[in-house]
Length: 267
Image (cartoon, rainbow, N blue to C red; front, side, top):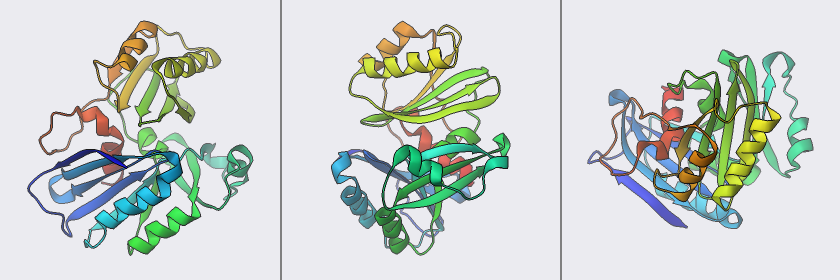
């Protein structure tokens, strides 16, 4: 496991902090969010391989336990998720099994009334049990939910919001005031990313010159990935900085957009 970032202020975690933790197949990150001042006092990010994900997430939980947090929010970044219109949701998760075929899962859902939809998702039973055994009370979300619910500050009708983790990227497509796609992809090279994005544009009849790419997560302005995206798309932007105080760091704020969105979602 590699610790990519560990950013902290002078304030120690206390009962006034909310623990916001995001866990997926290749990373686990968390913040101590001080709700009274809307301040993030610690931000840590770990990466690992898919084969060791559960063990490494357990290691991170060991670091976080033993503090009487105001509350604990766990955000699943595992890709097993589907968006369903609210009127068709009836506590049936069989579609997840049909599409993803993952054994030993716990099923959950996030209501998104702003878009008249429900995000249904699953995560491994062993991890779910670990979360609930570590903390006395836990609230769960899936990463697609805050990304959909929280306004990103861009007014374009056609948007591809893209968040990068060490080995994956997730895409949210908003077109003509509707959500058309929420999906996670694996990549190894910048051209892998370009291929998927061009395929999405083709399938959903999006002009490369008109769609706005809004980037967040582990992508830098001077990277080969960013350069490659600019060669194929006209409107490429980084996510806006959050409306909350952060510890001093030279790292760009868009690295942690998903955690900022999660804090806003539960505030």
